[in-house]
Image 1: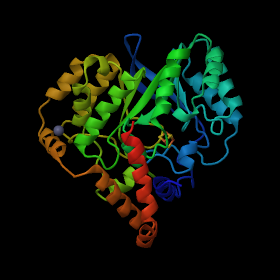
Image 2 (image 1 turned 120 degrees about the vertical axis):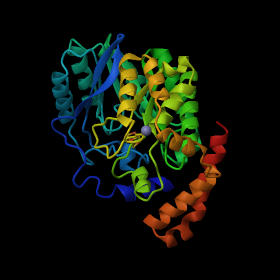
Image 3 (image 1 turned 90 degrees about the vertical axis):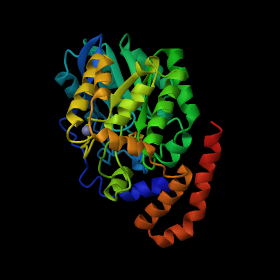
Amino acid sequence: MKFLSMIMRELRKGAFNPPQTNPWPPAIYYLPRNYGGEPYDMPLIGLETRGCSWFLSGGCTMCNFGGQGSYVSPYFLIAQASFGLKVCRGRPYLQIAPMGSFFDPNEVPLVARNNILSLVRNSGYVKSFETEARVDHVREEDIKISMEILNDIELAIGVGLESSNSIVRELIVNKGTRQELYLNFFELSKKIGFLSNAHVLLKPAFLTEREAVEDAISSIRWVIDNGGTYAILMTSNLRKFTLNYWLWERGLYKLPMLWSLLEVLRRLDSSYRKRVVLAGFLSNETLLKTAENCSKCTNYIMSKIKMFQYTRDENFLKEAWDHECDCKEEWRRRMEEDKGDLLDRIIFGYKYISEQILGKRWWEENRKWVEKEVEEVINTGRSN
Ligand code: SF4
Ligand SMILES: [Zn+2]
């Protein structure tokens, strides 16, 4: 098992007792979007599944999409979707997303998936349907069948990339995916005609503020340059049972400042910026903390960001960026912070985490294979 998966399993202990999510009624929340040129609250109906399979084996370091942790009947998932669609009747654009991956038959059994898609088609009002999946579950045959069921309803699939840099994605986020899978995903979307969106994480653990900004910018460009429809910029937040939270509690992780989010958008050319959707401030999971500036300007900046989401008018971003506040100085200081070589930091972080969680002896006895694991990712990471 991968080192980070082992650590995540330790950190998840207690996550399902009781489960962190309520299966009924299904969670529905609304995301600010622009649809058809108008401000729009997009409903997101959360399917309370048994949980993301990757999470159940450890999972990504910033995520707590664990779900119920045990068997959930496919008919119960269908009932959740049916209820959600009733609540959201009349909405032409909506998302139904499980805890992890809509195309993982272990999480959303085939009978549930096909029946949920039929409910969407038969709703009579949905025109554009979005869901989420792990990229390794996106198979041509499954998507073709789903598109046939949806008939003329547009399909968008969002997958978690987090970072186009394999070192960040594997050694920090523990995504467990390969870069070529994303390229195949973008390719497939062009071939059979669905929208392919990829989530990019702004500020994974271990990265400085500047590294996080640079990583998000290059990841967004990578998505768009390689044929992704939209990059979903997920500004990091804090949730229980995650490594980010564990580090944050010990003063070893900070959420990004909102200035960093604005900096990412500002530095992208307009052709890329147009294809970025913002996320990370709302969830059907309890968020303990979201990104912020100081108490004087956070509300103001957030209102501009939200208005940008609703209208896509870039003047809102400019107004936010031009706002004078003392905390911008603090942000500039953070942007200049130099914490040395990232790989040294990762190894040092691994050592600290394992000593705290698994004990000093564990690290002494196991460090060799952990360092080998790091080396392998670096070698493959540098080649793509
Ligand atoms: S980020 Fe996605 S793949 Fe990773 S554990 Fe969470 S739901 Fe699963
Ligand atoms: Zn401020």
